[in-house]
Length: 147
Image (tube, rainbow, N blue to C red; front, top):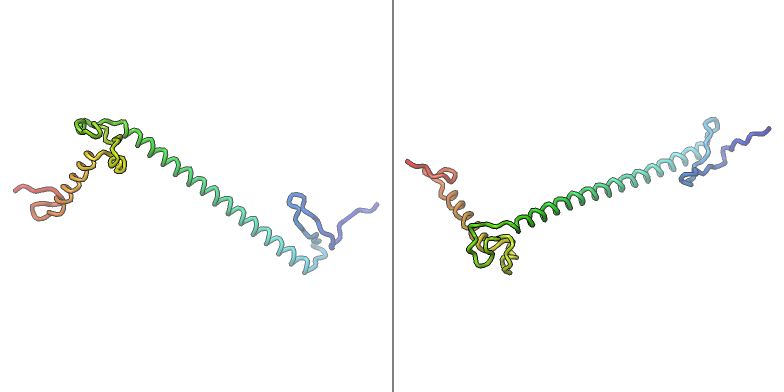
């Protein structure tokens, strides 16, 4: 009976990757073949590591894009809810009739709200800024102290 053992010079093909893997018998090591084998293994490990890094990066990109899409969808839902709101303080506005976020005026559409609301917001901001700038002994952090 003869058993067929592959000799040291024969090479095996790994069936799952069809990649060259030399047959190394530890009892009869060939230093050149061993060095080549180690280099091939290192090259293979480097390639696998690069592929894994690429896969991780792609998955992270997908996750980030999904989160951004969710945030965008939430903003769109909130904006659409605002469009339906009626503000009684602005009911007499000839432009929006109280629906300040659903105004059809060209300028208002560009601003994202009706001019009447934008004007009030700016006036409130100016009043707040003026109060903060006038801070002195009688006015601390925007609050006027009475004597």
